[in-house]
Image 1 (cartoon, rainbow, N blue to C red):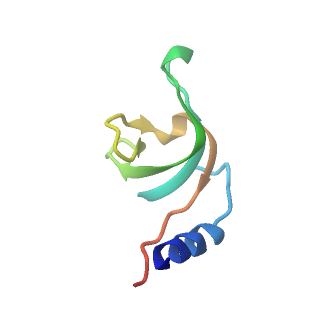
Image 2 (image 1 turned 45 degrees about the horizontal axis):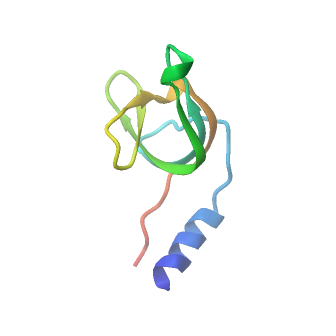
Length: 88
């Protein structure tokens, strides 16, 4: 029960934005990542948590548990975050 409350409080404080993240962290994302061909794009039909990291060549996003990385400037969608860890 405490985990649900913390999770709900964290998400409730956030708003969706078309602005891309400017720093590493965990972010909610809904939309798609464009690639060179439409067949290679990654579409998120439901919001997903992405790990954003600075690779030295810019910020890249990765869905938790998956092994693909995409530059966040190739995203078309909405972001919320960064997620903060629970206080307790």
